Length: 185
Image (tube, rainbow, N blue to C red; front, side, top):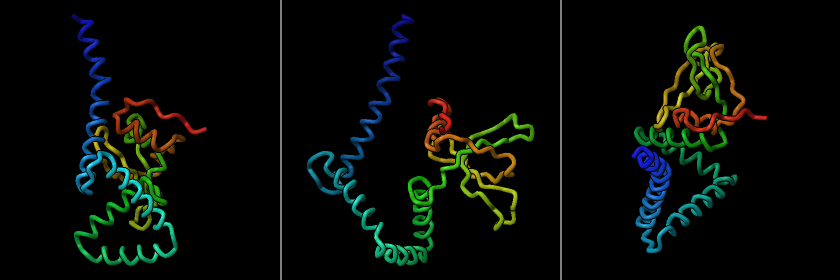
């Protein structure tokens, strides 16, 4: 009986991630297809990817820079829209834009003796404009969650990690159960 339960648990570990991934992809595909009114599953997703890529190409031109500035100015005048637009834009830029902010993984000592530490990412290397010349802003993503905390810590409690940011982020978000990040060579 114990062996059957072990097989069941192993099957659960192998099945649930696959089923969950397929289900989420199916929902995304059918939802996009429904919005675009396309009868062939997945075509809407492909059309969306192509459209976003074309927008990215156009957005890389000189002319688009002027249009983007005007659009930013317009959207930043509207109170609720400004908060939503600028926060979303800054967050996306932090991960995939030209102004990436999650590219400096660090280990932060939470106690004076360094016995308690946590992983994070420096998002602002200097807080002098806030009157905090010796501090940095460190973002701590939460495990199994799409959230985190921004904490201001003394610079001397932060140790730069020689690791790939995406590996450290995956390690933290998984609660430390993914492979330990490999140092850069």
